[in-house]
Length: 154
Image (cartoon, rainbow, N blue to C red; front, top):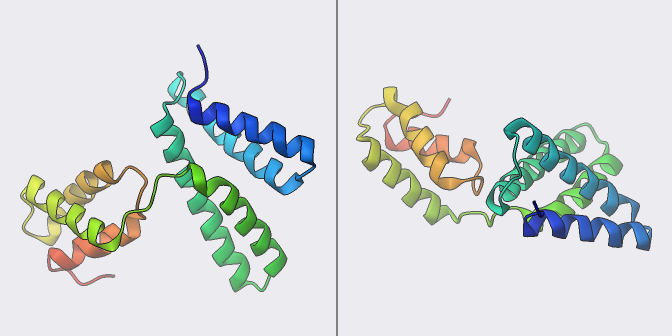
């Protein structure tokens, strides 16, 4: 079975980074490819391009969390390395949804689930995140769902 297009593209970029001696880019792509392969082992099949994008979104989110932690601890050199890695992986991630698109997504999920109270946040979150497919941070969606269903954010 042949590689999906995005996975093959990651391998090509890895080879180019290896030949050019770009160690940070090579390292980021290796970690990304390892994430793809781990997900494939977990599912026991090759990932589609959409699933590769979801892995990329998770990797980008990990880098963003690390950047925040390193900046908070005054470790600017480590934060910069994470930023560089994030910038390498980000083109593979799905395009982020605009604020208006997230609002529409939340409204659709509330309508689809028939939720009317804060007790149904989980149901709405499940519906919204299934439609979002890694294109938005769950915390942002949760905040909007809580606001719509009348619960103050925690």
